Image (cartoon, rainbow, N blue to C red; front, side):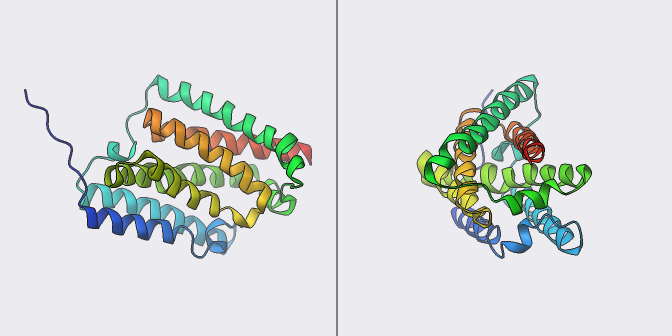
Length: 220
């Protein structure tokens, strides 16, 4: 039986979606990343969730492709196993950065920004981490990596472009946190290019945020 060819994206549609996506996730930064639980927080949540939902709708209705084309597929036991491995790697990179790398560079974490999150209720923190883990993996990993890889045939371009935008989106935390995010970006990108499992990345993202900010709360 002949296998059905995977539908490739039309170049102009993919380039337009990528450009809109990468620009939209950067502007305006302050209203996207606020941990505020009031009106500003609701607007930020709506923007992230709405943009991620729009990407999924775009893939299904406009590109007419399955969500597996951006790494979203039914998870198996290996998904959870590798998510655990990723979480350990991410937490280790966070601890290494704060203990050795940032002091060596004369940098430190943004305590005010960290406190603005650790001061939230546990329910609000979980909601924030879940939103970040799900939407950021769709917007900065799954869709842009897959489409850039198809359009350019270059893993370097597919990895570096969304990775740089993801790191840049954390500039409000300061140089120290951008170093931490850069290490995390390398781990996420390598795992995604290897496993092509976005659910795995989402679980690890949420888990690492939860553990990282819990440690920050305990340290403070």
